[in-house]
Amino acid sequence: MRRLILTLGLLAPVAIHAVAQPVAAQPATVRAEQPWARATAPRQTVGGVYVTLTSPVDDRLLGASSPVAGHLEVHEMTMEGNVMRMRELTGGLKLPAGQAVALAPGGFHVMLVDLKQPLAAGQVIPVQLRFEHAPPVDLQVRVAPVGAKGPGVAPSGAQGSGMEHAH
Amino acid sequence: MDRRRLLLLAPAGLLGAGLLGAGGWMALHREEEGVPIGGPFRLRAADGREVTDADFRGRWMLVYFGYTHCPDACPTALQDIANALDSLGPEAKRKAAVLFITVDPERDTPAVMQDYVSAFDPGFTGLSGTPEQVAAAAKAYRVYYAKHPKADGYDMDHSSIIYVMDPRGRFAANFTHETAPDAIAAKLRALMA
Image (cartoon, rainbow over all chains, first blue to last red; front, side):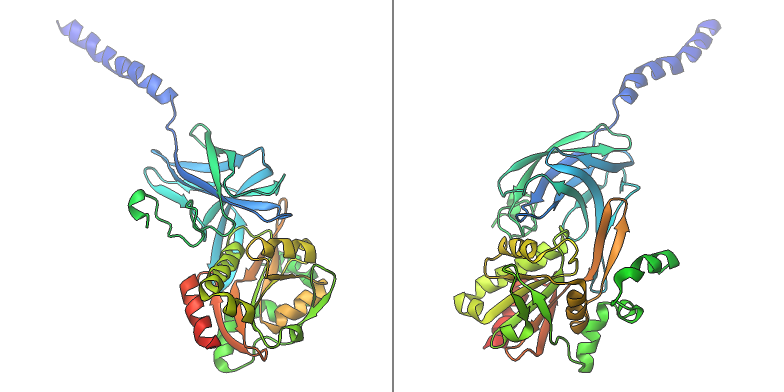
C-alpha cells in the first residue's frame, strides 16, 4: 500500500504534465476585434489600420504584413503640447494579459507603408498581425471613408463599438 | 533633445535652433500675448501657379500644416474642417478657404498635396513649395516641424493647429485636430456672422 501511494505520488506530476502538454502546445490566441482602415487619397503612399487586441497572456504585437503595401509598421502617435509626433514602436506594442489594447486614431496604429494602390472606402484588405508568442492573426480589414474616426461609415460618427451605440 | 538628434536636424537649414526651441505650443501663447500669427507666404499650387496669402483676402482662411505621410492627425483635422463647413452650409463654404500646407516639401509636391486635400473636399487647396518657401510660411504661423529619421525614411513631427484668419488676413482663432467639428462650426459661425 505504501509503495502504491509512493508510486502514485511520483506519477501524479507526470500525469498532470502529460495533460498540460497539449494545452501548452497551443499558444494563446490574440483576439482581434473591429479591424478597419482609412481610405487614402490618390498618390498617398501610407495608410493606417486600427483594431482592438486582447491577449489572454502577456504578449506583444511585433509587426504585420499585407499584400497591399510594401511593409507595415507599428506606430504610436503622441501629442506634446500641439506638436504631433509619430514613432515606430521598434520593440513592438505591449499587450498586457486580459487587457483590451485599442489601436485607434490619436494613439496606436499599424501603418501601411508604400501602398501599391490607394485604399478605397468599402474595400476589404487582408492584413496579418505577428506576435511575440501568439500565432499570427489574419484580419479582413474594412476600409472606411478617408477621414473616418471609427469603423462605422459616418466620418464624423461616434466611436461606439456596439449596436447599442448606433444612432 | 540629444546631440545626435540635433545633428540630424541641422540640415533643416532655415529652421534655426530658435524656431526649433519655440515649439508649436508657443503659437497659442504668442497669440494671447498679442504677437501676430500669420503673415505673407509664397507657395505653389498643383497647377504650377504661385500662391500668396494675398490671394485669399476677402475669405476666411483656415490654415493647417501637415504632410501626406501622416495617417492620423492630418486626415482627422481635414475631415473635421470638412464636416464643420458642410454643417454650416454652402455660403459659409464660399466664404472659407481651406489651405493644407506641407511641412514635407521633399515628398509632397503641389500635385500630391492637391490630390490629398481633394479626397476631403475638392474645394480645399493643397500647397507646397521649395523648402525655403515652406520654412518661411511655417515661421509666419509659428509652426514647428522637424524630420525624425527612421530605419526606412523619416516621419515629420509638426504642430497640429488649425488657424483661422479673417478676411483681412489677421489671426482670428485656432483649433487643433482634436477639436470636435461641432466646436469648429460654432466658432466659425460666430466669426462669420
